[in-house]
Image (tube, rainbow, N blue to C red; front, side, top):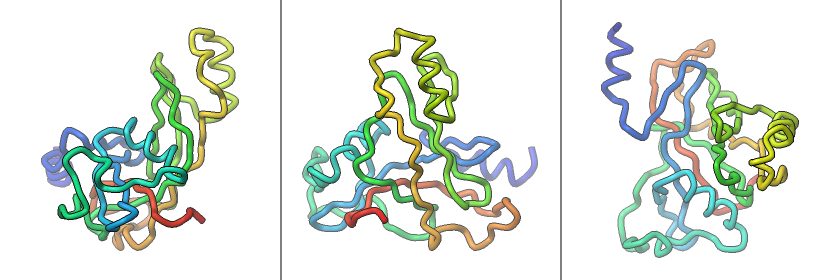
Length: 183
């Protein structure tokens, strides 16, 4: 193992996952509508629930157990990590499936995939329709709940050392909801 690999492995936490083709989201966060502080969300499922209702029921700190606007922020928006902004109102991923977002090596955008309950990775709505048609056990999953809209990479948090698809810094990726409407 070379020095770069060893340094990366030693900084990896249980929640952080890196893969060779890109980087996965390691922290989910939302901004409180009232105090504008960033709150970590424990699971992808909880985050997707908040995201799906963000327009009608904006997030506020007291929705997270034991947290209030008087508490310090869980995260600060800065360039210590790469931030991406997700579109509010996207549907929750159907039960048994997992939405996977992978940041391209050149930090230009993310790619969205769905992992089926059988472990197959699907890259398009047509692949999902074919999978559901050939696996009727999953017919409960409406096609409209599979959305390939990807979060926008916040350019001011992309490492300045990104060169030719490679980066020297391998910091975390945080996905969040804005308090303003997504453009």
